[in-house]
Image 1: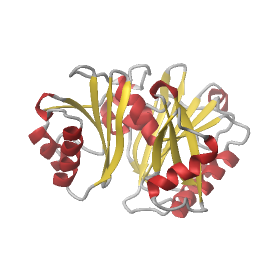
Image 2: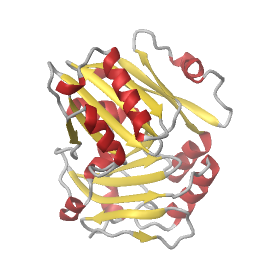
Image 3: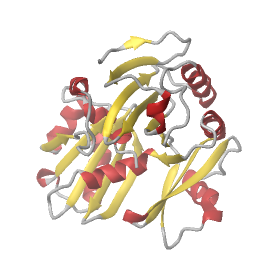
Image 4: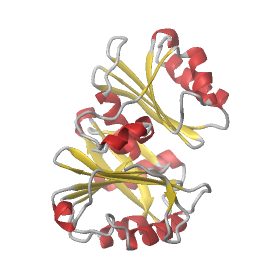
Length: 296
C-alpha cells in the first residue's frame, strides 16, 4: 500500500509517502532493523528484516522547525505510532541531517578532540545544547565528526532503552552510496545530493574519498556554480563526466535543467539492490530516499 495523508496526532509533519509490505508486530521488531533519518524539515524511516524493506514512511514540514519543535513533533508521532512505538528492535540506525560536520583522517583523529575538530569547522565553540559525536569510516580511512541536539539523542536513548543504537551523519550514507553506485572516467564517482536550499557534493576515485562538502544556494545558477567550481579544482572536464543525482529534485526541476546545460551525463540514483521492496515502492521516486536507504 502507498498513500499520502495527514496524520491525526497533532504533529506539524505531513506524511508524504507510506509503503508497507505487511503488518509489523512486536515479534517482527525483535528480528528487524529500524532505520531513521531526522532533520529540521524531514523525518523518514524504514524497517528491514531478512534483506527485505517491510515498512517505509516519509514525513515533511512545510516550515522550518527548531530543534525543540522537531523533538516535540517526534514525541507526538512516536507515542502511538504502530511501528515507532515498538521496542526491542534488533538494531536501530539514526541518520542525522545537521549542518555541522567534518571528516578527519584516521591517522590524525583523537576522540578527545572531537569538539575541537568541529569548532575549527564552525568557527565557534559547539553550543552546549548540542552533542558532538564521531564515527569511524574505515573503508575511506577517516572519521565522521558531527553534532546533533542533545535532546534528540536523549529521546532516542530513552525511547529505545537498552537497545543497540548507532548515530551517524547523513554524509556517512552519501559517501557509502557514492561508492556503491560505481562510475566511469577512470573510476571517478561524482554524486550530487540535493536538499532544501543546499546540496552535498561527494567525489570518490578508485575507492578513495576525494571530496565531501555541503553548499548552501539560493537559486539553480548558484548551485551549478558551486558544482562546476568543485569539478574545475579537481581538473575534471564536465562534458565527459557521468554524475549521479539524488535528493529533493526531479527531472523537471529548474535545478536539473541548469545542471544539464553543463553536465550532459546525469543519471538519477537508484535504490540499493541488496534489499527487496514491496511492490508499491515502485511508485516512489527512490532517488529521493538515497541517504536513508544507504544507511550504514
